[in-house]
Length: 459
Image (tube, rainbow, N blue to C red; front, side, top):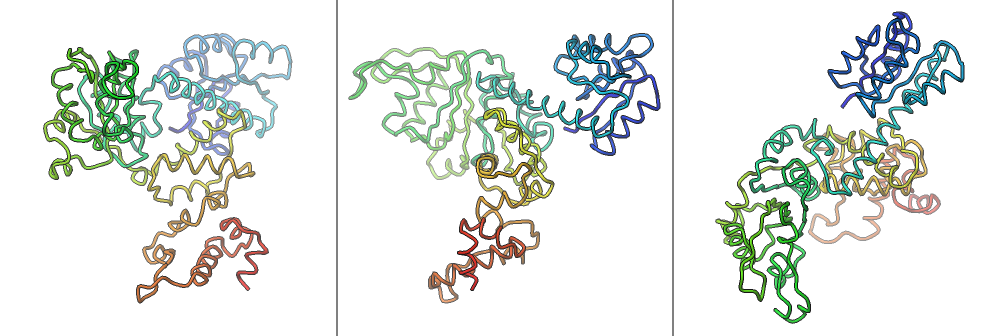
């Protein structure tokens, strides 16, 4: 979402001066107001990320407007513009809630720096709050990166479904964020204050599926030394998320169907059914319809789970979200480690956008974390992306099919025999040099070898 900065000043020349700096040097959208009342009217329409307001204005002055903003729009940063460099005035504004102050005599660079720092701090604070909400398992769709861009259509549908209390089946490739989506469905439902219990069905041994989901009595089987409520009862009143539901064995599917039909669970070794009130959200990266046709998934259970079907698109189909995801993971890492957020070059963003991300958002997060740890650069460049390995560049920025084909490493010869190791190594070295633009240092970094070693390989 693009930033919009509201400039409030009764002096049209000063107002235009600041607006011009913001649009030409920072590229942000601008809204202007010649007085406090007009500014409050613009704020009421939303979409403002920062206010730059004059200290002295006729009628309601800058300090009074600041007080109104702090009261009505908490968290909205304000930069106060003063006519002089009087310290008392600056202290007064900061104490009243201003994020920073500049003087009208300030150089454009000082104004730009102030705006950048205030917006960066606001974004970092927002990320900290988001992480705290996620830790408390209270998540909303607005917390999902891309909710207003690449995921806009699916989020619009999900927001209609969230309060309806019906079963939802989430599908999509691994790493597309199905659990995050399930948590948002829970967070915007009437069950939001109740438990959200996630279960990875693919990680449960077949012999323990029933006891894990529905509980067991003490002594029901070897190793059952205590009574267990089971995950369904743990989620009482809330939501249970059955991830990788397609991996459930047929016997477990039968028991799950019975629970969904009768809304009660019978623990292993127990004879009495126990009522449960839970909402079921399930997810899979498999084609359940195909599994039904193969007889590996019960059709009646499929219909029970698939009351509403939401498909999450892979990251390659919403590449426009990569820049926002990059900003999010950058701020998240900074919030977790206490380090300043890394800056990124446009070329770095382009390199990320050119890759197909078969592991989707999860792969992007892991790659970025690795880069944050290993790179010493303050501003990330495509060379930092290279350290992840040649496979990142094999789909680089070349767009044509011919060029992409040229990046494929051939392990077999034309006769179907494995090529000699030295030939394969030579191809890898040549590929690294081409991808690095004949930069030996970058190529050596890609390959994880010393420059001297690479020189020997070339010779």
